[in-house]
Picture 1 (cartoon, rainbow, N blue to C red):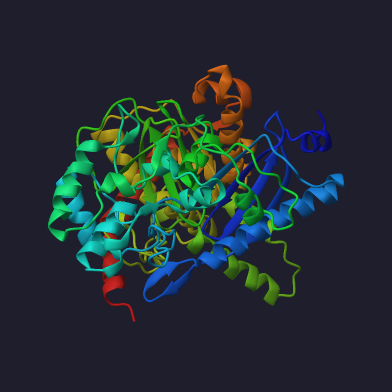
Picture 2: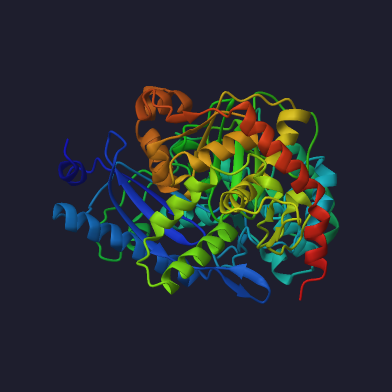
Length: 530
């Protein structure tokens, strides 16, 4: 079926994801191939010391994104979108959206980026014997309780950004298990919120005398493939003010951006993993069994079908690298030479591979922000060398590239060495891998593991969400999510694999030892910065 007929017959599937800097919608056909897209750029705001997006910005962004999708369909095929086979909503995970019984937002949306929850996360981690990250929804809720915020007593519903959008479109207060796992711990046996820890939390806050119990204000948790409701007339108008989109379309469980990344890289089966490397970076390894003990630098979340996942999240990745590349672009412009940014990146990245495997003693700390994994609450970008270091362009660029995955290696060392986690395939995606081979080769050396990159991984989270919606539409066939992705979507395509050489691994490890040993230099820079 050609794309135009697919859309006209209501057989296309839409995935929509609200990321930190862009909202994007993707239409796919029944072969899971993208056939149209729309987007909207936005930025969070710092209001009263907290990072937020206003409700108005959320809906203006969603409507503009969908309008741009409609325009793309009209430009390509000359038709309007009237019905779809299924819709999936995803968004940045974690954060805090609390509503009263009338559906009114009680406090400004607090995003994952806020780090004011340290006291709450510490109490909950000790209470649960489980690492509760600062950005998780329950950490935000308990911090509001510690801070005696008046609105807490009025809470009727607590959810994530994806959960809020889904509720607005369908009337259903539900959440996919992957996104739910970023609110509070999940019981792997039930694929639902952990009842033991719910009871522990209720006992902790009982003296406050709130009218609610935790379970009563949380969304219902659903696994991938389960029906999560249908688009209402009101929801259709909120998404498409033009009035063309019809109600009644099935929606799959809303998910977080971690889960859509897993799906987009076919990494939902145990012993598979993926790495996303862009402005920030994170790795996710699907576990075969529980870890021996909690680690405060490793988050335990789940796949969209409920398998436990060990996540290492790093705040910094390519921002500092991009700043250095822009210096070379500025120099080229100063000489009056025409600049092709893609060519500059390609030349510098490729030249980096000619450097010494240990970067000749050059170090870079790309800490634009703090890094919890290495113990920094704030950061300062820092390039370090000694008088005897081999200061060449290739070594300089290689040290910049190594720095993008240095913190990621720190977290994964715990998984591979202390927890003996085994992984058969790691798939990478994100801006670091746009230049062929280079980023892939460096990540392979850092993790000491083969790294694959798929062409489809560039489609990103919205495509992954569309795949989950498609899986929901096809669920009658009774196939597991992992089998569905293996057999129907990727059909044996595991991407292009690069295996690290012993020399690559030894070189990165030598650089990494010096990087770790010299962290006090970065700490001194932070403590004495002006």
